Each structure stands twice: as structure tokens, then as C-alpha cells.
Picture (cartoon, rainbow, N blue to C red):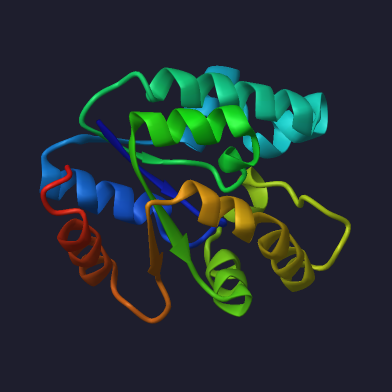
Length: 173
């Protein structure tokens, strides 16, 4: 069984994956880091040099491989659930938790993270906040369809969020 965290960038997937793995005594992996490691370059460079479809192909390969593991907390990339094959793999491998936050909160968190600009490409030609709002509108139905559990990350410390996730999934993991 694996526990997968999905949601838009800066909703806390990596932070919570680490915390949940510690509490469960499982391994944790950030899928985007695995993609970058395999490619030998940042996601932004993959997008610039190979395009989004090539990145999504790499992402699907990584998701498929990670879903064969056991006792793993997976921080999936924000766009990973966009492909049906990824959604099916994530659901078949275990439980999926969708982490949410308002567009303004996501934008503030992304701006505060010095690594975001260098590692993550812009996905549209819109301004940052408009891009977040637009992509959330497109992705929310997909996230909702994929998730077993939805957790709002607004104004709550990661430790409290991890407690809530484990409490709601008690007896399943």
C-alpha cells in the first residue's frame, strides 16, 4: 500500500509526505524530485527542452514505478492526476489525499519558496495568480475524482494536518 498526496503546487505535499512517513515508519518520495533525478535536469529545463508532453511521459513512468512499491508516502506532482493512467495507478496502489488551499495562499507560498522559480515552469501565459486560479478550476474536478480524502491546508500547521490525515485513515493504512 502507498499513500499519495495530490494537489496544486505549494499545498504542502512534500512537507506532509515527510511527516506522514516519519509517523508511519514508511519511506517517502517526491515524484518531481525523482523525475528530475532521472532526467538529470530540472522540471523547468525538461519543459523548455523537451516540452510538456515529454515531461508528462516521464511523470507517468515514475508514477507507475512508484505505485509498485509498498509502505510509501508519495508526494505526486500537481499535474500527475491529469492522465487517467496515473489516476488509476494511484487509486489501485492505496489511498489518495487531496491537499487544498486558496489561490492566494498558493501564490504566497510559491513566492516565499526560493526554489520554485528555478525548478518549476510557468504552465500558461497568464500572470501567476491568474494561472493558479485557472489551473485550479481545470484540475479540481480531476483531483476530486481521484481522492479518497480531501484536506484543507489553509492556516494549519503541518503537524496538525498530518494528525488529521492519519486519524481519518486510521485502520486503513
